Structures are given as structure tokens and as C-alpha cells.
Image 1 (tube, rainbow, N blue to C red):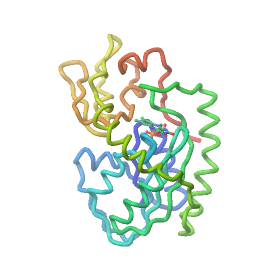
Image 2 (image 1 turned 120 degrees about the horizontal axis):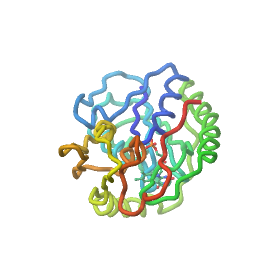
Image 3 (image 1 turned 90 degrees about the vertical axis):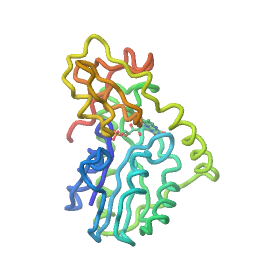
Image 4 (image 1 turned 180 degrees about the vertical axis):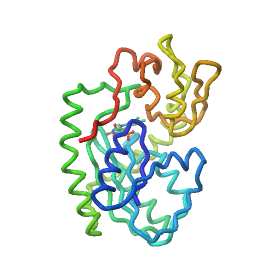
Length: 250
Ligand SMILES: Cc1cc2nc3c(=O)[nH]c(=O)nc-3n(C[C@H](O)[C@H](O)[C@H](O)COP(=O)(O)O)c2cc1C
């Protein structure tokens, strides 16, 4: 089973391609996060966890989900991390989590995908996005072939002390900087409520005609990037930047 978390579609794209190549099915974990389904998995099979890299490691949306969910013991666990540049301490994070859950850790691999952190980073041009996605496809296909033949993923290098440092940064970044105060909606808003349904945490509600952000946010950037009329901004960070609409089907 391929379980994925996504904000803007990169991880969905990777998960669906892996599922197709391995004759498996891909499922979005937001249905569990939003509480409409119990995270209890009974199938004794390989699990492929696909998630974005946040703050130099596996997005907490995925690690928190794995911690809370119930899986059979000894399942084979593969981790595929989509990252704009570098997946950082994700291999260590995932190996440790697998040990705690009693999984057979099959490795972590990175797939380089376009940047979506519009609140803080420079967004890529359409041409760069196309090139990145095109280059990702053979990488995904190589990884799928390994998963299909039940092999381990190639060992990923880790810089000594990297995970320790990343844990410290995450411990500060998540509670202090992943806030919703800076989200705002401009006059362009057409009250279509797409942001409400897109939020994988179910953190957006509607106060009359405008979206209101609750406290549970992981900065996935789905609302800003995928708003059909680009009516959402994050402080000054997103102003004037081209929205990332997710990878096109290849
Ligand atoms: C909150 C946040 C933190 C991020 N941190 C990193 C990072 O540390 N390293 C990196 O290479 N990319 C980072 N990115 C970029 C994403 O990992 C990348 O664009 C990913 O493919 C997005 O996946 P999605 O479309 O499935 O949400 C970050 C993005 C967000 C929204």
C-alpha cells in the first residue's frame, strides 16, 4: 500500500506513479488526519510512505500519522521523500521511527520535485518546473522497480550530527513558525471554498464568505498555491510570486 501526504501534489504524483508501477494502490492520509477514517491497517504487505521534506526531514504530518496509526508488526516500510533541494535527516528520522513501530526498514530515497514553500522561498519558473518533473520520472521508476522486486532502497548518506541538529530546529520551527496568523485573503476571493476542501488538516473554515484559518496548520501551502484566483497571501512572503499548481501528468 502506498500512503502519501501532500500539500501541492508533488507527493501525490510520486505516490500514484509508484502505485501504478507496483500494481498497488495509493491513499491520501488526509482522510485519516481529518478524522473520517480510522488509521488501522491490517494487510501484511509492504507499505510505501511518500511525503514532502519539511524543515530538513520527513514532514511531521507523515511521522505523526505513522506514530498514531496501527500496522501489523514486521511490515516492510519504504520511505520516499519529495524535496525541493535536499531531504536532510529524513533517513535517520524514518529509520528510528521504523524501529519504534517494529517495521522492517527498507530505506529512504529522495525524489527532487519543484519548490512549493511560497511563503519563504523563490518559486521556480514554468520551464524549471517542467524540467524538474521530467527528471523525476526515471528516478521514480527506478525506485518503483526496487520496491516491486522487494529490495532495499540504496543507503542514503547522512552527515554526522545532522539529525540531532534537525530535531532541534524542528522543535522550534513547528510551534513557533508554522503559525496561521499571517494568512490573509484579498478582495480577489470569490468564496468558492476550495481552500477549505483542499486543506489536508481541515484547518480552514468559512466565516460568512471568507476563509478563516484555525490553529492546526503545517504550512503545506495548498491554500495559497491552489487558490483558483490567487486570493490568499502569507504576510508579504507570497506577494507577487507565481503560484505552484502542482506537477502536470507526464
Ligand atoms: C513547510 C515546508 C518546508 C519545506 N522544507 C524543505 C526542506 O527543508 N528541504 C527541501 O528540499 N524542501 C523543502 N520544502 C519543499 C517541499 O519539500 C517540496 O516542494 C515538496 O515536494 C512538496 O510536496 P507536496 O507538493 O507533496 O506538498 C518545504 C516545503 C514546505 C511547504
